[in-house]
Image (cartoon, rainbow, N blue to C red; front, side, top):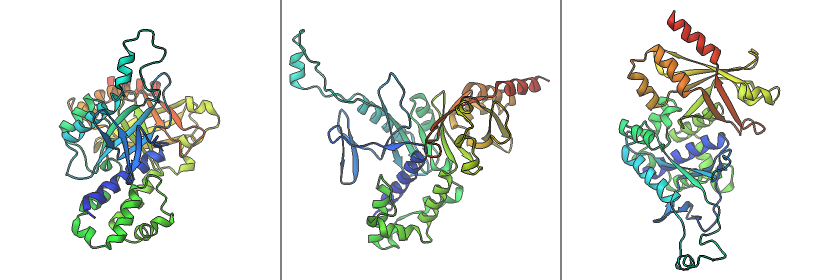
Amino acid sequence: MKAGNIKGALLEYIVRGLLKNCGFTNVKADNLFSFEQRGLFFVNGRGAAHDADIIMNPPIQMPFAYPTQLLFECKAYGSVGNLPFVRNALGLRNDLNEFEIVTKDTLLKRQNNRRATYAIDTRTRFLYQVGVASVNDFSSPAVEFAANNKVPLLSLSWFLNEESVQKFNRIDQPWVNGFDPAIIKNLYDFLRDRNGDLYSAAHEEARNFLESDNDIADIIRFSNDVFKYSYVALLETGDMVFLFSSARTENNILNYAYDLSDFSSLRAEIHWASDRPNRWRLNVHNSYRDERAQTEFDFYLPKRIFSRWKEFNLDKSAALDIKQNFFSKIFVFNQRNNPEMPFSIINIDREWLERARQEQVN
């Protein structure tokens, strides 16, 4: 087993686990336009059938639009995620979304203006969004290209601690060769298993491996702990951020409400510190300012937004503009922790923002 295969499978496992925690679900193959083969999931496009590293349904679908499916291309090699990765993702997205079956019979039917049937296949059509996941951060050209073409990026370095990322990068061929090939093969099969049932009899060797002391086991244990307190959030600009709470699940404002009106009245203040300007804090409360219903979340400012802020030398007034323009409304997915209310909207506290602006003026 090559080390690159293990690292790729481990990256897929972590990204899939993060998405599942936020309410995403596995796509089921229809055995025509999508199919599974040799443990891989394929989706047909114009030019070929593409191996989808990760393909999932979002927690909710938007009305008056084709249903969406999310694909992530996982790149577990190299020091940074480079521009070619993102370019390939854009090409894949175009190939999948522009795919349509047109046969000779359908072309001939177009000559008959009184044809009784449509010359298209009656099937469910999806709008595919394709992102790129990497272990390490992305290069500046990759970030710029992704932003301009609305390709979501995800790096493990954004939510795993530095030690876990270093352990991931240390996985090489000599390390893999130090274990029984049969165990490594079973571990690989488990990591690629889209159902992820570690207690299945088929994954007994993988379970024993992950219950022992080794780098991959440490990475997965830390990842699973992060998942308990993490939430995927979308900004109105389409940027994706990960919110991390230090509060226990049962004390988190996103996981309970006195009634449904609480979730239409979530407000937030956003703060940052000069020693870590790229890490901001979201203080979420309800409109009633109930002390029992407040939770703090940390998140990393999306790189393109942070780069824009740096053009203003991290000016405080510019930071307020960023809060208003990019974080006025935050959409949070939370189906696993709160199935009854899997989707929450957090609005920036306008009164707080206005007070902060007045303080800047004074």
